[in-house]
Amino acid sequence: SWLTARPGPTQVCDPLADIKMYALTLLGATAYTPGSYAPRLSPEAEVPHHDHSASSWLREERASPQARVTLTVALRVEGEALKRLESTFWAVSTPGDPEYGKHLSNDQVTALLNVSHERVSAASHHFAAAGAEVTVAPNRDMLTVVMTAAEAEALLSARLHWYRHSRVKAAPRLLRAAAGYSLDASVAQHVSLVGELVQFPHIAEKATTDAAEPASSFSAAAGEEWPKGCAAAQCDNFVTPAVLAMRYKIPAAAASSSTASSMAVAEYQGQYYKTSDLATFGESCKVDVSIKETIGGDLPVAGVEAELDIEYIKAVAPAVPLTVVYNSQYSLLAWARQISSLENPPLVHSVSYGNDEKQQVSAEYMQTANTAFMKAGARGLSILFASGDQGVCGREGCGFFKKRFKPDFPAASPYITAVGGTDFVTKSVVGDEKAWVAGGGGFSDDFAIPAYQAEAVAAYLSQPDLPPKDMWNSTGRAYPDVSALAGQVNPYCVVSSGRFAGVAGTSAACPVVAGIFALLNSRRVDNGKPALGFLNPFIYQNPQGFQDVTQGKNTGGMQEYGFSAVKGWDAATGFGTPDFDALAEAVDQL
Picture 1: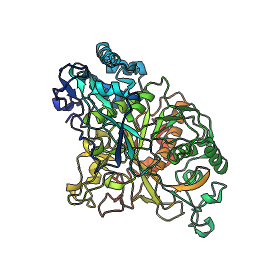
Picture 2: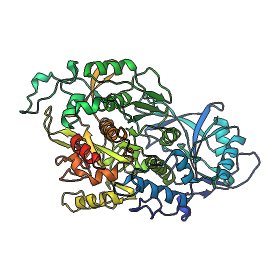
Picture 3: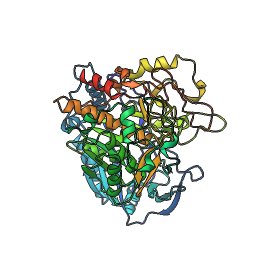
Picture 4: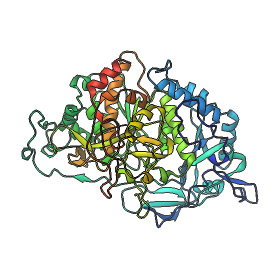
């Protein structure tokens, strides 16, 4: 399969070699022009139509003809160009390679992709002729198309409906194609997909916990006293910036010194922030929670997911400038377009959202996302994704009769860093950690084990404590790569909607690890060295930079099977949690 990640940069299949790559189905339906009978092709034909009986999204009314629709159109990148991109990605990302750290400019990425002007022109004119406003991305591999729903339905031979989440009432409605879409054959040869017309994101309402008992009721072990990190008494038994600094050995000087480094968090689905909440957290916990820039707009409405991300990436790296990249709908492609359009994008990106691989369904969609990740890595950007909060069964569940683990995407992509979750072994004792029972981890069903982790994964697969082999793919890309505190033993103290509360999830762990690597980037960038870029080759070359986790299992809590945390790398916690001192030493030796 062309989707399979290859162990070396020169072994990428030509995506044009297999016609199934595009799943282009000849429909013979009418084109969008009345009376025309030109053949049409469906780029994502393998995606099943929305099934209301199995989905958490409920179909509502059809889109008003005059409603404005914004679509991301991914243009086809030729196989040889993808090979060159991947080869460059591995070379600039792998310590020891002669090209390590020689990151590309955005113009160089554009030249590498080499999407022809004819292709861009043909696709742009096709959509513009139907009434759309078309914007071409700087890399010439994506179009942003704005048109009315009536124009989109005619052009795509689709019926657009609004969808409402059945459980999370605050979730924004989605506009989706109820039964797929197709393109005129003349333009389909230039287009990989129109996203995300057929993908339905997972949305979970983030549960919060009030402080249950005062800090005085806990007895900490000698030398491991729980630090009083925030003035608010509600935070006394929760993870705070001070707890993270103690456990992950983050020196105050590293966190507070000015830097040329930069970082960002991605927010979707109506997750906004209130500056008053950030100010309250910063004042109580003695950290600077300022935001340098917000891309995509913001409203003064509290979103606990966004505020968790912002408060804790800044808790770890308060002096590193923070950008918030916002999208009103969950769209990896729109986010990728946003960051690739920036001439000087933030160097580290934390993204706390994802879906099961199976829920993505479309091979074209995952490949387009992976191409975006490689583009980012080639430019020297570090992309980190949370590994998920449902253990090995993912958001879809393991099934009833024939159980099968459900790996996460993008966490299982070989081209990003996946962050899993842990808990303290002993409540309110800053010491050993165990795998969080609900932390995402496992093996991809779509991507092979990349070279950078082959040795570590082979060692893990040689130990006896593994789930039944028919429940997972032992040849797949394994994740997470690293972890941080995420569980409910001691939740994170967050300020949202004007009150302090406890929040758990790998969406807390991800910004923490991202903040630590933003600090490590500072050690290089401030000394005139290139940024770390894609992190995994460095991580797997330096396991001594992490505190090993050898207890716990990520079953999800609903069934008996999962991956156990063991000595060395494992599919529950990766290499474990950060040791800033050890990581700084490894970074300084690059």
